[in-house]
Length: 92
Length: 403
Image 1 (spheres, each protein chain N blue to C red):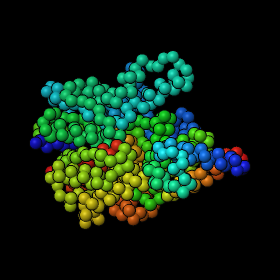
Image 2 (cartoon, chains in turn red, yellow):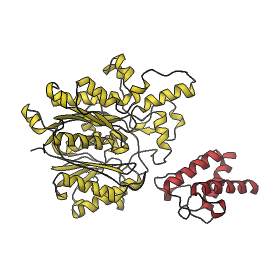
Image 3 (cartoon, rainbow over the protein chains, first blue to last red):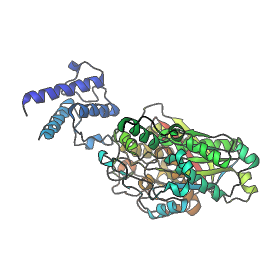
Image 4 (cartoon, rainbow over the protein chains, first blue to last red):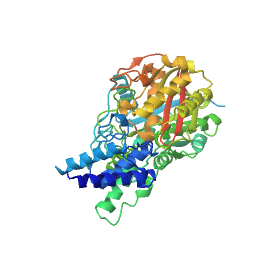
């Protein structure tokens, strides 16, 4: 996957998360956790819905036990990596 | 204050179309959850549920009735007919004038809405069936029971999501206890297993795709069910005067609000409600032998509910049984507390505790006696039924063996 695509995915994911957190995009860093950004479990479910719609992907996320998920939501960076992976899979 | 007893009960749910069939399923630990059979199921991610099977409305209702009865009303009507028949009540005179119907339902006529939206949005039709509104309204089931049996007292529907039935039955209890009505038909009904109903629940990502395993460490969410249960709540002297067979006594009820979160449960709110029901019943915690848990099979509910029970019962938590029958009949949302009350009556009357089936791995956070997988014989005097709804609305009912 070209880096430019990955960069634009990162940018779009950050924009979605920033909108959910009601923060300017500059305040959402790769190291931020949903908790840091004030995103609770419902907020996370809503962000993932927005991500699925934006990238036309299916995110394997179970709100029942987020710690057990294949989709790692521990930080913004991990979410971006997971979305990049899902987008790449979609294209193959 | 008057004493309130249960003199009749009826049900239609995934475990059977009658109370005896349902109680057999409870005794056998039979599961009513299976692959969903509904239109467009292939477009759903969640494809299991506890559906009412082999149900032919035409066998029970006229064409004219079917035109007016959504599936949730059909279930409620059949459950009410069974309950009234068992009670032996003749509903006439002053009894009919003062008695009424309070039923819980969260969604009302969900399949009517679903089919009508499909007709106008997807199929491009210009009109829907003329009875869409009277079919889908939440009070349709309560109203049709009132009309059918000529009950002219207080009748209404209660919608508090997963606690709807318990709130309804609690209100019926309070009305009979206070002397407002000599008899109340009460319980709840739900039928959300349509494409739109299941699709909406999928969104929350709390649904299991394989089984409902409350309290088991490997649980992975809730499973929806459908159906109804209706009870006859009757003032004791009224029941005695006609020599009625008394199934159990309703002795306490409490309802509270968490005032906390729209979906997350609260240990403090659950504990406050359980303690309130015991206070209302003038009972000591040590008297409770069985609790029918809310037990949805989600990580959040089961952990919170067990912590609340430990808080209220302290030492005694280790000596009581608490099972979740949702593992068998699924989560009937607004109808669930009513079907679950059948397990409470069975515990008191038959001395059989319905199990939590699908239990595979102990969870240290849920280390109570959850009656895993196999029903158990036990004499119990006092039982509770818990309901803790989305929106933080809690309702707990206490029943006692009738003496």
